Image (tube, rainbow, N blue to C red; front, side, top):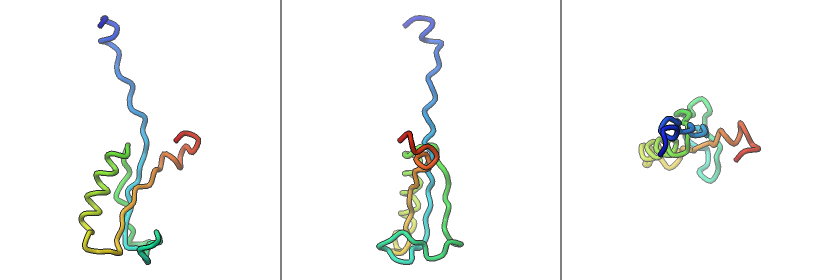
Length: 84
């Protein structure tokens, strides 16, 4: 390793935004929410791994309600559809 290598900083990871959202569905075979006013917008996360961790927690909290579902929305695909 040269002195130059030690001084270089790693490039930051590309931000791939993900939204975690959920709520009660009108029909469990679809993705239509029963009441949009009660949709739980959990948050936006910088990568899939963080979004998945939060999604899993929310899904486990609502496991007793078959009508409630949480989803991960790949916002980065909507913001930049050319680069997937």
